Structures are given as structure tokens and as C-alpha cells.
Amino acid sequence: MRDYLVLDVLEKTAARLPDKEAFADPDTSLTFAEFMRRARRVGSALSCEVAPGSVVGFYLDKSCAALCGFFGAVYAGCAYAQLNLRHPAPRIAAILETLGSPVAVTDREHKAQLAACGYAGKVLLLEELLEAPCDKERLSGVRSRMIDTDPLYVNFTSGSTGTPKGVVVCHRNVLDFIPVFTETFGIGENDVIGNQAPFDFDVSVKDIYSGLFTGASVEIIPTPYFTQPVVLMDYLCDRRVNVLIWAVSALCFLTTMNALAYKVPALRLIMFSGEVMPPKHLRKLQKYLPDTVYVNLYGPTEITCNCTYYVLDREFQDGEIIPIGIPFRNERVFLLDEADKEVTEPGQTGELCVAGTSVARGYWRDPERTLAVFTENPLNPSVHDRIYHTGDLIRISENGEWLYVSRKDFQIKHMGHRIELGEIEVRLNAVPGVERALCHYLEKKGRILAFICGAATREEIIAALRVDLPEYMIPNVFFPVDQMPLTKNGKIDRAALLALYENRKAANHG
Image 1 (cartoon, one colour):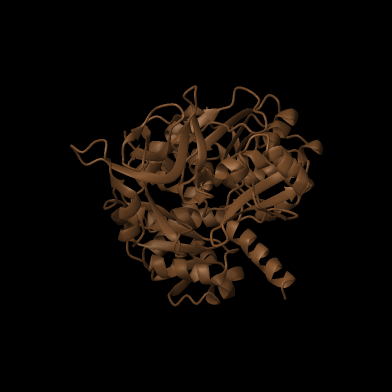
Image 2: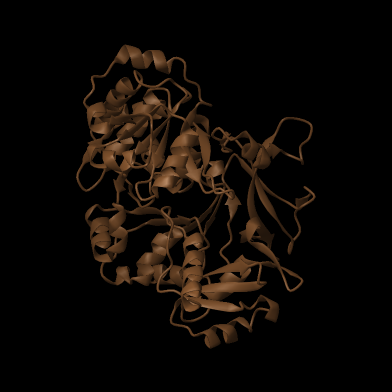
């Protein structure tokens, strides 16, 4: 029988594997049956507080209890949105205002912190919701009105206007993507997935739902462990983690800190996404884990995690770009030029667009920005065919592989030339002595600014770049940093880097 809701999947897995570990953190371990029971208690209580179709914000650290809360919201006919504790109060306030929910859920430890964000709605404590009695009749009534296009979760991404955008993903999006994802990589009930990503980052969706669909166990790794390499490696080994689906920066942390020299977990599969993987870091992973399968995943939050994948079958050298690969089953990807014509020839570059049931519903309470990027397919004008414009520029290589170039937003006009900053970054990351690099364009001054983490000198970097790049693509300003600041989702924080540059410049002129 077809699954219409993720709750159907949860209940089937709980019936098949009731006593198997579903989720665990350092303090708690829940079987599938116990996880379902706790979620139903939360759902019974929430259904008395909020109307179906709402989005409930959860101001919690990632944990087994938080996941019980999320699925409790789903049992109540609602969607859930994780509010990251490490985000500044103004951002939390902006997200809560966008959600427009009459309730928010937190725990006793973070109740005062949520209050400091200025939330005016009703605050519910997760500890109390978990103790509520299960009202089977009430849950059945809510369930009877739910359909597969109901919102399941809302993940907030940054917006160019400064206002966070809430990406609405529905049950059907996940139900169509995750089974294909797990089947493609052979994830099953004997696997143990090590969750790195915060729950407000779509990488975690693959962890959570891969576990539910297959019966795999999900070990939730506390965020502070990613500043403690010895503790992190002990945790991975002690919990017998064998599958990682991590952000690139998290894997680069392992290689930069030489963590694998301390202890090597028995990993059979490492998948990475979110940023371009520097080959030098990948080779370090391959040195310690030569038998592990490595997969480059590509795709934004708006298409339910990923739309393409590339299984690495060779070693990549510095300066090479790892292809984004081929589409997942039931997803159509194609490139469009600025005139909405399809790009198909080697050497050409176009914006990647996606069609299929993985495409999200849009942005929560934001029809203007939704209509700007979720459009009708210009290649198929005969019928309604909704697509998502990713804003990512992809170049077709001479042998037909698709290579990520840059964001559309990072395309600049410098000294009369149209330049992709991503191309410069690839060359910078290949320079010996450069650990990580990122570029920014100082438009008012017409200068390319390069942020550099590593021991390489300015002269060494320029000499290396001149081997591959024309003079107009050589950065004009080099700004050394001890380490790259990261966003709460594990990507390099461009805004923080720019603020650091501006502050130091102001201090030097003070």
C-alpha cells in the first residue's frame, strides 16, 4: 500500500523493528516503538493548542527529544521548524514572525533564552508535552484530514534582502526522494548514520528520514564535538558509525585537525554536500579510509536535499573540480541560459533548474519570492510544469560532465571581464600552503578580495595563480585568517569574513 504521509513510514518501521534503536544521543537511546509513542503523546497535546496546517517552531538543541517534538507536530497535522539556539535573537525573532504560529516549543533550559528573543505567542515546554496522555481518537481525527501535499517542515535559508526565507517541504517531497536516496547507496537497517548537521539544515533531513525509511540507527553527534577532534573520533568509533552524510566544512575539520591520525572509524560510505570539496582534503580522507565509498551530493534546500550525485571513482588533483554527477531517479535537471534556452554543448555554462516531485512548495508566507524562482518550465509550455531555478551556474566539461562554477550572485564584471569568483576559489584552494580560501568582490573599489587560511604567503599564492589564471583574475587584496568562520549550517560565513575585514581596515585607519 502506498505511503501518503511520513507517519505511515514511521508506524510501519516501528511495527517491523519495534525494539531496534532508532535515534540516540549521548544521554538517550530510543527504539522505533518508543520514539513513535513519545511523538504521539506530543501530538495529542499539541493538537489541543494549534490548528492543523500551522508551523510549530522548536527552540531546542538537537536531541532525541527534539525529534519526538518534530514528529509530535506532524501527528498534530502541523509542520515543524527548528530554531537554532546559536542564531542571534533578531534572526530568531524574524523567523518566528514569518511563521506566525500561535505557539512555540522549547525546554526549561532554554525558556528564558527564547523569551529574550521577544516572542509574544504561547510557549510550551517539551518536557510537559512528552508526559501528556495519548489521545488516539483525537489523533485519528487529525490524521483523516491530512494529505501528502501538506507541509512537513520549514527550513529557513538566508535571503538576499536580509529576511530569512522559509522553504516549505511537504510529505510527498520526502516520500519520493528518500526511498530513492537510500536505495541508490544501499542504506539499510544494519547501518549506523552519524548525524553532523543541525536540524535546521537540510543535510539532517537525509539522516533523520533515511533512518525512518530503512530502519538504520541515527546517532546524533553534539555540535561541540566538532571542536574536539579526539572526542569526536571516539564517539564515531564507540557508536559504530559507518555512514556519514556531512557538510564539506565538517569533513575538512577532520583533515585540518588531522583527527584520523588518532583513530579511524569503520566508515563504508561518506557523502558530502553544501560546498565545493577541495581535492587536497578529499585525498587526506582517502589516505586514511581507502576502502570507503565517497559521494559528492548536489542540491539546494528547495528541492528536498539533492538532485544529483557523483560517486568518486578516481583521485582528484588540486585545481580539478569534482563533478556534480547524474540526476537521482524521478528528478529532471537541465541548464538554462539567460534567454531561457537550454544549454547542452560542452564548454557552455547555464543555470541549473530542477523539475519533479522533489521541488518544494515554495517559501512560507512569501508569494513574491516564491514566484521569482519557482516558475513554469520554459521548455515545456504546453502544460503546467513547475521548476525551481537554483541560481547555481554549471559548466559542461569537454567530456560531458557537469561542473559547479559558482552562484549566479557571485558572477562579477571586473576590468571589463565577466568572472566567476568560484573559479578563482578553485585555483586558490589548489595552492600549496592554502588550507581554505574564499573570494569577495569589493564592487565600489573594483577589487577582488581573497580570504586565505593557511601558511602560504601572498607572493607564493600570486605566483601559483599566474600559472592558470589571467592577470585580471588575480585577487588584488589578500586577507589572512586563522580559520574560516562557519555559519550554523556548517558553511563558510561570508558575512562574518567581510565584517572581520572591514573592522580590521577601520582599526588600521583609526
